[in-house]
Length: 457
Image 1 (cartoon, rainbow, N blue to C red):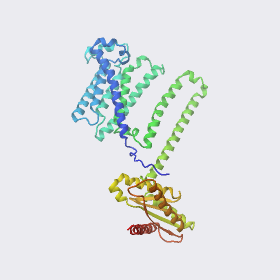
Image 2 (cartoon, helix red, strand yellow; image 1 turned 45 degrees about the horizontal axis):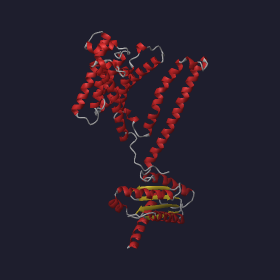
Image 3 (cartoon, rainbow, N blue to C red; image 1 turned 90 degrees about the vertical axis):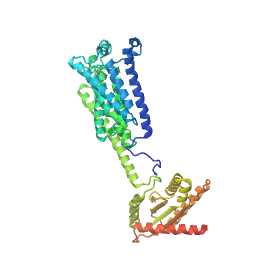
Image 4 (cartoon, rainbow, N blue to C red; image 1 turned 30 degrees about the vertical axis):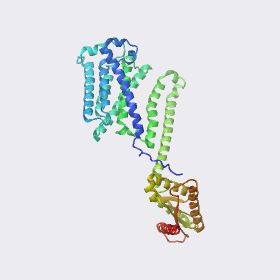
């Protein structure tokens, strides 16, 4: 089967279209977070706004809202192609957000007032779970630090940003899990241990933006790549993340445990989990094997036509040559040259020339057997080798010319599709090497080309 002729990105390189889409996704997430923060700040500046129904859904403490707004502004000002001044200002805003988070933590544990009372009073009277919890303040401090480091072009800072992003993802996952377990009344997690849903939403959204931003440069770029490994990562990462939490929830539910006898519940659940992971392993290995085959084909095949390149041709044709000798069968090499490729490229462009080459590859592929070795040596030269007799290779050459004439008859062409063909045949007792046969076929092709030029004159 011929390989696709479309030019694809290197496996690890993100698709530019995907990056553009992710850019708009980031902007949308930042807009949603900023809306939540500005709603709280508006209620702080204009107390009458607090009575609006929407405030029940977006209410934060004022210090948290300030921290969120500073982080959003810092992310917006550190986007790609920003000026050096904007980047420095974005880091300054991130630093202020980090200091504000540290102040909140200090006030929480040291019971000392650092921030103005007008900024904190509403946090103590709110009916919402406190957004000034240690987890919330620590999460926003981590976000501010990551915001200051993400997007750096220095290699060492990219590694640091990767580590910080992974830590932030872990912290966000802990907070999300804690609040989910609290909502389900699992594992002793109570309302007092939970943070406000609005603050949690901001943390999760900002973490998502940071992951998408850093994924363009760091280790997380594997999720944006176009290769098989990236597709595997995107497919199985959610499953592997959810599976442990699903297991804990199942084990904690009495009604679910009642479906399985107590003495076999643990072994049954473990067995199902092991079987599921084994199935995932089989799928991953299967995909990796496909990937290895594709890599093998890429090293041996010509990208434009799907035929073997010179390396692949000689590797497989040598084996076919030895088999022909062992079976005492004749062996032939056919050398084909696409006529007029230089004129086509000069007058119609290289895209048209590539189309002629691809069409020649289709004809070669269609008019030889699967066991024949078909290759393109680069430029306008094609070589075919197989177990052909003298009559067999002559008929093959005639079929190639007939196929070209048939295509020319289908429509007008400024340059007709035509071939110069040379071929040689040897018996099994020949001492010539494959390379020598290719050279002789090349010389025969050149004589054919010269003879056809004289005939046209």
